[in-house]
Image (cartoon, rainbow, N blue to C red; front, side, top):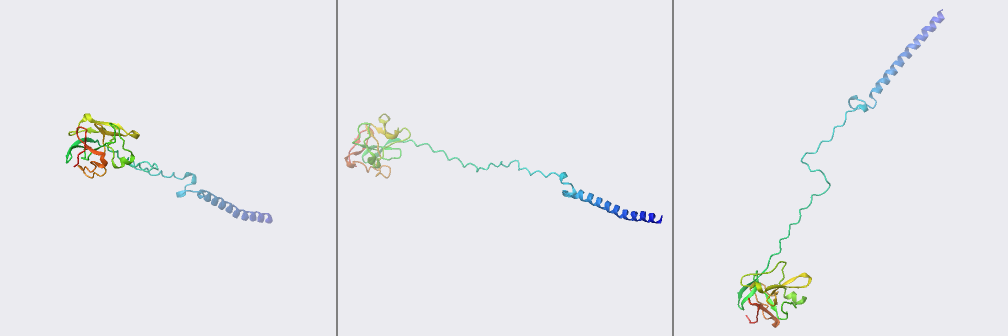
Amino acid sequence: MRSTRNRGRTKALIAAPLTALVLLTATACEDSGSSYGAGPAGQPADQQAPAEPPAEAPADADPPTGEEPAADAPPKQAPAPSISVRTAETDLGTILVDDQGRTLYGFTKDKPGQANCDADCIAVWPALISAKDVTAQGGADASLLKEVKLGAGAEQSVYGDWPLYYYVGDVTAGDVNGQGLDGEWFVIAPDGKLIKSEA
C-alpha cells in the first residue's frame, strides 16, 4: 500500500510543474500573437488607419502641363506707308518730288511707259516703286500718273511718258545732284516734260 501511495504522490509532484509549464507557454504565445505585425498603437497590420490623402492644390493654381507659357506673339507689322508725287520749287523751276521732298528723275533711254534701266543702273538710280498705289498731290497731275510692270511683279510709277527714279547722290530733300548726269537724267516738270536746263 505504501508503495502505491508513494507512486501516486510522485506522479502528482511531476504533473504539477508540467501543467504550469504548459500554461506559461500558452500565455506567452498569446501575448506574442497579439503584437506580431502590429501597426501603430498596437493595432494589427491589417487594421492600420488609412493614410491621409495628399493636400489639394489651391483652387487658383494652374494645372501642371509640362510646357512653358507661350511667348507673346510678334507684333503685327505696320502697313506700308503710301507715297505721293507732288511738286516743289527749286532753282530749276517747279519739279516733281515725292512726299518726302526727294527729287524724281526721268531717263532719256526709257521709251514711253517702258523702263530700260538695268540692275547696274537701278543700283544708282532706284526706281519709285510702292506696295500701295502712288497718288498725285500738291500740284501734280493725277491724269499723268500711272504704273508700269517690272520683273517679279513689282510696279514702277510713271509720270507722263517717264518712269520715275531717285538718285543715290541726293542726300536731302530738294537736292538735284542727278540733273544732267551723262546727258541722260533730268528732273520732270508738272506737265510731264523733262527740264534740261542747268541749275
